[in-house]
Length: 171
Image (cartoon, rainbow, N blue to C red):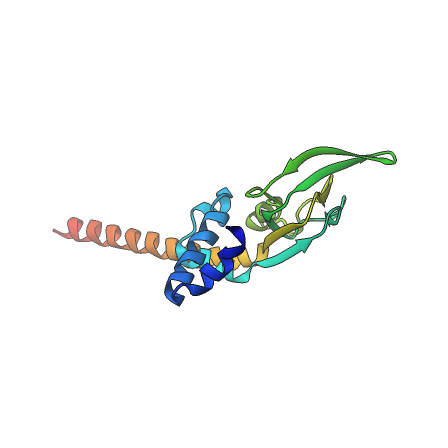
């Protein structure tokens, strides 16, 4: 039963709780292509820094002309994306549990564009909704280490191949 799940989780050993939480966080984050390549340490850092948000029915999550400052993952409930035409708001699409939105802020952060483009639509909760948000700054911090690791590896590979070539030419 759903009501027993928190009690069952609390009864688990701490190491198993951490491992289970890590797997749940990883499965949530890796739905987005920008997160799928990240190593476990970066996923853990992002999951540790995300913000949990709770909305009631009809709460506005993002307004038109507002820039998203993170990627929003829907854990419970759902949202409607609406555009305003004149005095009326029309639903364009819906997002459900497991979906995400706001990923343009990560694209802007990667490109170094600064502020992502403003939203053309309003995002509104359709019911009680739980969301976790990973902000762009956290993403850049988590990926910086991976990028530097890749650069160091490639420089090391290049240095070794250059050294081999130099030794071969001397021989």
